[in-house]
Length: 490
Length: 71
Image 1 (cartoon, rainbow over the protein chains, first blue to last red):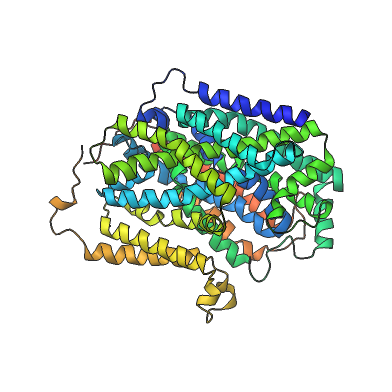
Image 2: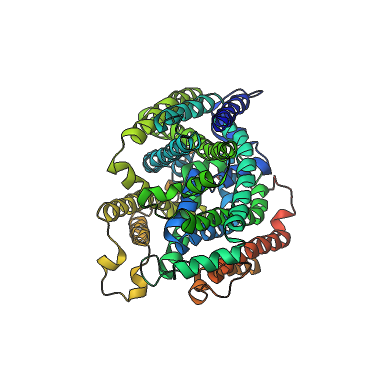
């Protein structure tokens, strides 16, 4: 009962804070989507860090450590490298977005390459990656509430309530609602993860060293990368690939636009790697669970954190953990929802259907689309079968395909053309879809390679095809005269 | 140039270093050696980025710098 009260209180508070965030701001398109480009270091920091602390890391990070062991280390590595890249990559993106009043990632493409068609393609790729990601958040939310309320609220009911809360505050406050809630979320999650990650190993094993010794003795090889499968080569290629894709998520890319000046990114690049270390404590929880609540298989490994907590703590504290878990679903969920609706309204509708639509029309449409997108996501969450699982696996690889075109567009002399970018992205996405649905690996495709290279992440194949098509098509479609390269600006 | 070289170090440490440290013993701060190696590079990344921030001349001018609107 006490767990339920705490969960309900936090959910209501999130709703209140999300709605209140609107106060003092009239919600124009630029306000709703990118907070009027007025956010300071703290908000931008939290929005960008918000990407790392989703339900995926809270449940999935501990579950991954519990179920797979060493391969989980990769989560710690890719964000760090992505933040280093961000120091040079984000300021020019922000500058361009500010000068051109951009509100979304596809908007960036359509303006940079002067091609609304390219913008629409990028928007569709983005939505295809975002919806499954939202579904994942809602699924996580359902699991957390059902477990932490000791079954008093069913997972289905929790998903509906969660979706309703997010929809309300996103429709009203847009990205401001996400920003305010991320303050509460990060404070709570920071405290809880640090506590669990320190307390559980000490309580059950008497220390970190003792815990890892015990695991190593019980399951030799669990704490290092195996020779095959999730091997060192897998780690290297996956870390590099995910670091490149990190800022290509439409909602992360969109959060770049919320900053009020560009130095914020450089400053954040020093602090964000350290902030990531909180993930380490999420891993510790998963490792502590391996020997204490063994036997979880398949998708159930994600429950390891809660199983161990239920066995260890009083109900009220399980409620607090559950409340933190809910926020890890609501905040990223709200960012994804804002982003997906903006993509559909600004880049699919204005980009393809009605080029002349005003900002006010687009803003109205985007807010109208919020409940629609949320309903679709709830539908997939409750009835989604194999498709959604496949889409989820593809999400990261999808958005990574946008990386070459973004980087080229930042070069002082961009020789890439809109045709090149369009065909490259399309080819990359096609390869991702094909290899994922057919469960292909590099080893299967190229059995002649040495063993070490067989574990290279298949995503590299898609990226390579993308870059080759991008370069070839760009070379063929170079504009004849200088005039043609100058994009009209309004 | 120096800044970019500095920034490349974590990539080298994490991506190229891990094959050489893929073992459990000795534990460092209670963590398996390979995990401790990665954690060390995460911390070093922050330090390196702080040094870069200090050295980078673009952080000395005002934020609303003279970068002109393109086209």
